[in-house]
Image (cartoon, rainbow, N blue to C red; front, side):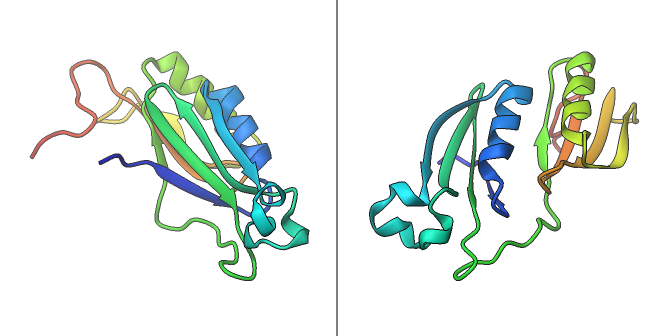
Length: 145
């Protein structure tokens, strides 16, 4: 079984995924607009140019998303969840954090903590909460109890 995040956007999914592809080194491998689906994918003509489903790979990981369909599932900003990234170097952590926090909101600045060489949280310009966590080789991402 695989597990991946699926993000819902308020009409700006295409812009968000283009930004993520550029700044996270991802590759969009599939994307469909509501207007490209049979019978408009249930979104109606007002959503014809919005994203029904998109899929990006970042290394061996997958990130998926779509625009919300107001009549079935109105957009709500994510609450109580973050997408966690684990960059392989301090420099990469700093670069990714700068890109994701640009025009967004920093909740916790990227900094050294007792568990990480760099950790910070932000909400990007598209409303997605991110957690950036870089640990050195002596610290596991998910320590065992």
